[in-house]
Image: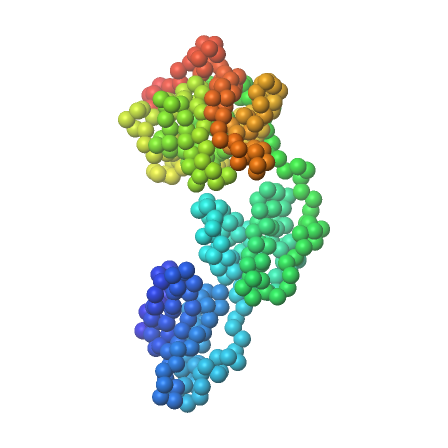
Length: 402
């Protein structure tokens, strides 16, 4: 009876794993997997390599090939010679995605690797997955990208680049001899994307009224997360995954590790009075552990759409990410004495040339704190010291008891 299943084969650890009847799956310390058949021919044992897994041979393919070669050996024929006559099956695009991710992700941040695989599985594999990787043309890629090219232009460009990365990987492995489709050829076959591609933002002069309107409503988790994103200039994903363990209310900081950040660099956010008021309204001191803005399911974060929904309920058509642009516009127009570098660093953007970055030893935290404090007073004066009549936000528990 066979000892391996497709799932066990894919999850096999380094070593040799038997499938029965002389068929083995060898797994190198690097994670590379290959099939080996052990047979007797002319009184001598032969170990015959059949091909890699899963790119060359699936489990069922390996069993079929092994059965054929065992039959030849029983007849006294040379199974190795027969194997060398057979061309190994070319991998499909889905196989190549798996192999490329397994090999390349070792040099990426965990978040980058997951995004690479998830985006291709969702937007490319359904159309390209069953095609042989050596036969994919520009026309095939255009068919895969067309559904998202204008509706999700930012994601579409990422998927296009990742498809080409997989094809380049396949060419390097010898699975593809043709050159990569030209990016200009791909653009010619697709509709023109919306101009710019920047995230739509609320004009900064309208942000204070938006925040004031939200403060008058029930302090739902998604609404508080939305406000925290506005007040800190953080990205939606960073807010939704924020945990209490990285908040220091005494130091008034929110520290994110490299794994938390799009830039793959650690970043410390200075918290203004308004942001701290939001945090204090989320949970009592004794319950501050884990996610600050938990979703409906225990231990799970809010979905990205939950924050967008707050904007839509307010009649706004902009994006959550656009509040970062609103902050940047405000800093440029209303805080002209503050160096532009300070606002860029507050948004966790890289600043300066590589040479300038090498000499920049400070994160300009004091300047960033002054800027973020001013932003808090501008957009949420009722929550800021020195910003008018200060309002104490009710906790969610208090709001439910009203």
